[in-house]
Length: 447
Ligand SMILES: Cc1ncc(COP(=O)(O)O)c(C=O)c1O
Image (cartoon, rainbow, N blue to C red; front, side, top):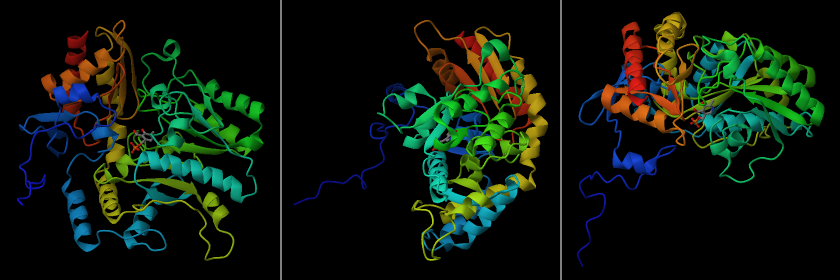
């Protein structure tokens, strides 16, 4: 009997059917794909070799730029030396080294690092640590979690429960119970065309006080917010807002979690947004930029006091029943160490801070283009709201993203009809100009 030729021996095809793309309009994509075959520094290259300027650091993650030699060499060396080691009851040296390096970058007091593989896992890990923390301290009635409207905390059940994006929630059943939400901090009427943190809105933090009054602090475990909400359109925190949240949490023994999956590793001109805002959370999530996007990794940085609360009972007892097969994966640790070296040696966080005014000027110059409703900037990040077409919310944004790629050779990110720009931190002044020129032409074309 002759064996049929199997898939492995068949020549590669261009069949796009099998891959179900995440967060993608699959049918439109497969009709006219946007393929990326290669990358270097500030550019992607299509399979035909066309250069595409990266206006979004991949997906908010390639903060040191793409295919940096130091990172790829570190990954290669690590793969040759130790491909995998479990982190349950064993460990490899680079896991400790990277944890120490991350702790050194974090605000004082945050110095225990739990590793996972993505932002979503980081969020669910932080929520679980918060619940278990109260439990081990004898306050097991603190089970309620507080998120915020327009928050994005990944796609795990914990993350979508505390998150505030309707399409990420409505298809997926009852979610976690016992979750409340603060109001979003954005109000165009009060904040339009603000550079950096808007003056209006600090009072919205006081809603936490109202929620405490409703449920009683003894039932509330934690509040989770992004210091700057990136995925729902770049929403910097109102001046004083995070301080107020911190004060209310302190008053009531509630843990404050900053989701820094986007804001970590330089996006706002500091290692973490907690530093920019001089507000220290109890738990801080990170992912993306920790390896400059090169190998999946995420994690949670905890206050030492949170960690210490678990260190009780017989010494051979597992203190936290949580973890992932790939926690502290050797390739991710090697990539992380190389990325942190680049951030330090090239001063990339400081660079983001220095470029912020120029970046904001270039963004705000688009203010008078047709259909532009608002522009927000903070760090090396800009959000541009376009007016929706009647009966076709998201149509203008989608067309802008597609035209930017095909006509202008630029990658932008869209949420509905909002454009987000967040280039790698190595972006040059000339490339910032080029990027916003391209975006300006796209906005005009889709008007
Ligand atoms: C604030 C925040 N949290 C969590 C996530 C989820 O990260 P991941 O896609 O790595 O699971 C994201 C992703 O953009 C994010 O922006």
